[in-house]
Image (cartoon, rainbow, N blue to C red; front, side, top):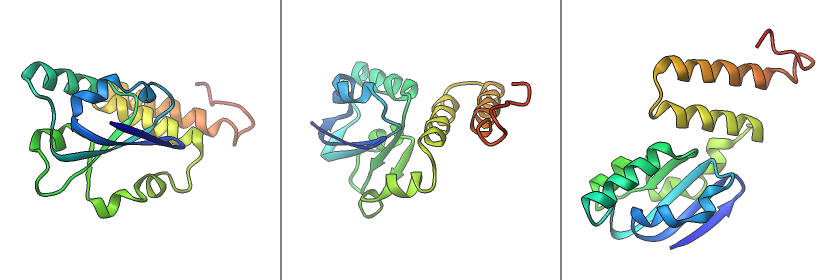
Amino acid sequence: MNVYKKGLAAEIRGLSSLYQLLSAEELRSDVCLLIIYPDCGAVLGRSEEEKSAVRRFLAEAPFMTAAVCGDDTDKELSAAADIRISSSEAEDYAERLFDGKSVAQIREITACFAAARTAPAKKVLDLESRAFYRLMAPADGGGSHGR
């Protein structure tokens, strides 16, 4: 397994099982988007226990995940990622996704996206509202409109 960091994004290549993600220390840092390039024949996990651990890890991940999928990609593996993209989309996916956004905006969007996986809608809306006010604070001289 090889991890390549590119700013706020990371790419992982050489995975035969997504279970390998659980040991990737590089993902414990400031990654906002993980692009997964699974090997041909890669699987979500080799056992139900591994599959469950991977699903839990991805559901709780503080970053978005995109799996580069083809027609032969394992269905469980592709379903576990937040986003499925083709190999032709993958090369500049992070650049296109983050285009025109500041680091603060990318981090706030990522936090809201990650929370939306498991949190109730009310909590996600609250997070989005707070993020909006944090992002607007510099524009209004540091005020946060009571937030």
